[in-house]
Structures are given as C-alpha cells and as structure tokens.
Length: 285
Length: 304
Image (tube, helix red, strand yellow):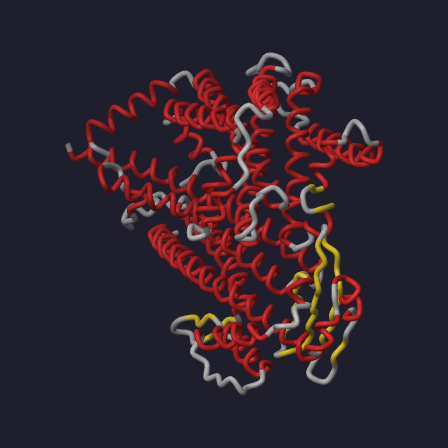
C-alpha cells in the first residue's frame, strides 16, 4: 500500500546518494582524462579510435592528418578554463545556495540561467545539424567547399565579415528565447530545486542528443574519408560529449546537497540509513 | 487486489522486453548489411542505365559538367519513371538518378560525375553479377541487368520479419518502428503493473522475482544486471531504430523532407518517453525492494 506517489527519480537518486563518493571519484577520473585529451587535442585521438572501430580493416584511417600538441594550445587552455569556470559560476554565480523553501528571486538565478540557456541553445542547433545529417541534407546545405564548412567559415570570420551578422542575431534570439522559457519554467521554485531542474534538463537534452548523434554518424560516415569534421552528426557528438561531462559535475554536487537537505529536514535521516546498513549486514539482507 | 499477479505480469513483460531488444539488435544489424548491398547494387544499376540509355559512344563524347548537363532531366517512361539530374554539392558535381515505381520502390541515388560518365562501365555488370551470385540467385551473363537488379532488390528488400507462432510477417521497412513503439508500450505496461502491486498490503511478497529479492551475493548482482537491463533496453532499441532509419534514408535518398522531419521527431519522442518510463520503472522496483526488505526483516525478527 503506497501511501504517497513517489517521484520517478526518487529511489534512483537515493541509490546514487549511497555511492556518491564513488561517483565523485569516477567523475574526477573522467575529468582528468577529458582535460588530458583536451590539452593534447581530442580530435587527434578520438577519430583514430572511432574510425578503427567502424572499419578496422581499412588502413587509410591511420593516415589522418595530425597537428602538433602546441598548435592551438592556447585555445584549448581557454576552453578548459571556461569549462571549469562555468561549472563554478553555475553553482555559485547566482548567489549563495539557500535551503529556504521560499521561491528564489530571479536575479539570483541570472548567471546560472544565462549559462544553461547558452547550453540549451548549443544543444538546439546541434539537434538541427544532426537532423540535416539524418535527412541527408547537411552536405548540400552547409558545405561551402571541400575543405571548409559553413561553421568553420562562420567562426573564422565572425568578427571580420558583416554577412554573418544574421547568424549571430539568430543565435542571440535563441539564447534569449531559452532564457525566458527557463525563467518562466522555474517560477515559484526554491534556489536548490531551480538549479537541479536546470541541470536535469541539460543532462537529459545532451544525453538524447548523444544517443541520436552516434547512430546517425555511424550510419552516414563514409568509411574512406580522412576528416571527421564535415558532418552534422559529428558536430552533434563534439558538442554533446563536453556538455554531458560538464553537466555531471554540478549534478553530483546537487546530489550531495540533496542528502544534506534531507538530513536537515528529517533529523533521523542519517541514523535511519546507518541502522538500515547495520541491520543488513547482520541479517545478510 | 492480487499483487502477486501484477508482479508476475511485470516480470514476464520485462523478459519480453529483453527478448524484443535482442531481436531489434539482431534485425537492425542484418538489415543494415542488406541495405549496404542494395546501395552498391543501385550504384551499379545506375552506371549500366547510363551506358544503355546514353550509349558508349556518347558517353565518350560527354566530358565534365557540360556533358552532364545533356543528361539533365533525362526521362525514361514505360518501365517506370527515371529522372536524371545534375547537382553541385560543395565542390563536387553529382549525377542524381531518381526512380519511381520500379519494383514498387522509390529511391534516389547520387553518383560522382566522373564515375557516372566513364565510358567503360563493363565492370558494373560484373559487380551486379557478383552481388547476385553472393545472394545465391540464378544468373547468367546473358540476362538483362534490369532483370538481375530486380531479383537482387526483391531478394534483399522483400524479406519481412516473421513473428514466431503468429505467422504474421512485418515488412522490413516498418518492422523496427512497430517494435520500438511496442517496446514503449511494454515499458508503460510494466510501470503500470508495478504501480498496481503497491495497492495491496502484501505487495506481492509471495511472488518471487530476483530483481526484488536479490539482497546479497550473486543474487544482488543478478538483480543489478536486471535493473540495468531495464534501464538500457529502450536506449538500445531506439539507437538501433535511429541507425536503421538513417541507413534507409541514405540508401533510398531523401525524397520528402517533411516525412523525414516527422520520422526524426517521432524518434526523439520515443526516446524521451521510453527513457523516462524505464527510469521510473527502476525507481519503483527499488522502492518495492526496500519495502519488501523491511517486511522480510520484520518476519525474520518475529521468528527469532
């Protein structure tokens, strides 16, 4: 007889809370690998392994053009600093995390909302790119010439060529759109719930994006090409994986916060867990 | 309320879900391999079509994009509708053959211009013959390439998926859609059954299920594997669905954008609903498991 309806994640979160120390160790391990790959150039290593998995018999993949570690090193360092900095800003940037149940003021959420809406904007555009690849339209719509696609040119000449202003306007509008949607969605929630909801949305979005991008890329990738860049699904993978890793950090932090809140809200919480664990050992249940 | 029956039903549906996931995996891999052969056969067919329709002499004269323009909007009636087009994608020129109603199929294929305009396309006939031979089709060199191609397509595309014991055959184009939607409904049913088990005081204690009772040792690991299975099944099914539909589009060509948008949106919706439902199932099973553990502890305490 279930007295109250349980949330669809409650028990999973409880279970994850039990293993939170293990989770944080695993996350740091992933983070270290991510930082290492980012510094030496992830695009050099992943395509090699990825292509080998797709077609181990084809020796052409080993002939991928490799750049030196020093090339673009500064950009990679800036990327990593932004990656870690944004995580910290998301958690603390909007003000101190309060355990009050009162609805949070919007201004306290602004920095977090700006970051999350930017991530949702990236996910939205990535999903469009994946769709174009899925529908076999990416190449004809996006590729300007053999060696440069529209994104490459866009980022290359963002500041120099005024023809890309409409692109910037569209991106800005999408960003503002998601900012407003998130703001409306979070009305009436307290600070902790609001940030948890935001992380849940991005985690879910980036995971779905990854699960769609991977099969699309496997199905459409030409087994003989040497560059992994000009493909909508590849862009989807390139964006979804860092966002996924980024999101897991704050998610683990909120797992700790959740446990703390539960402990504060129910004084016997910690004791209850301790008793249950002791009892289990005793009876082998 | 008879909670034992609900638990038993949930358990059986879970097993059905695992079997369906395995079938999807197996079917998607073999279907993708078949589609790769279809793609190759169509490319060879296109080369032979150019050779027959345009002729060797004319193909020799046609050079570069100027020559290809002569092929634009080349229409052949009678046997179906075939239209050739020229398209510039990036820096490359492609010849496009759009086919309607040949062997009841509709498809579109792109061929790099240089390859399409090669005067010597005799290898294409040989390739088509090899494909037919590998499929075990009776083929003599004198048969028309159209006939051989028709047999290849029929052999590869008309294979359905037979549902055991029912004798009903699903068309392979739609089989994965049906199975993915079925998997989603199975997940919803499982969730409903487990939810119903809570309505009874006994919470199905008399019905054994390792996912609910594996508290220690290997039983605990088996229960964990079971739960991971429930969590991952919808993702595997939808992953395979996406892989297959993308292969279908890249082999058959993108004929209708609106239809492709529809397919893509349905895949996203299926992923979201199935993924979320599987999460809630696992959450409910864990909740039920905790209650059961407490009840078993009480029973053991009373005994001692």
